[in-house]
Image 1: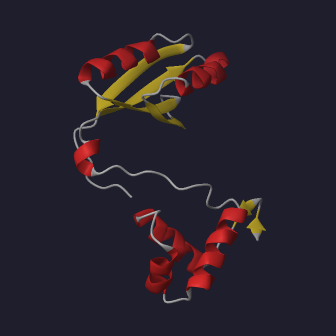
Image 2: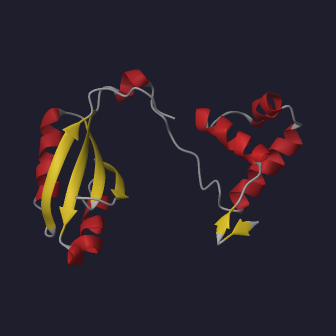
Image 3: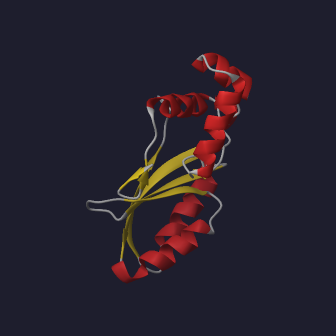
Length: 149
């Protein structure tokens, strides 16, 4: 089932995905109960979504008390166009870089950085700013998370 090469899902599958967004480790029996379906139907839907590549994996979500021990920042980055691929490769090697977004507008990407201390965050920000092809950066520290799904 696809439209223009994109996988489409039905409302029941969307509801299943929304449950997994709450807790990706939710037992299949609980998923089935919450959806009002049998366990085998819930398992079949999960397997179908995995086969189709809609669900690629399940991730870790840290407890707020632990996550708050990290210092996080968004970095807006402007690149020299011919360096885009090499900068992305180098960013992937920095353990504190959690996510890299390609964006439109005055900046080329947003880099999410997460470090164990302000000192380490400062070092990583400087490291990213000094990469060949990075023309300018602007960083904003995250003070609190108001909502995360």
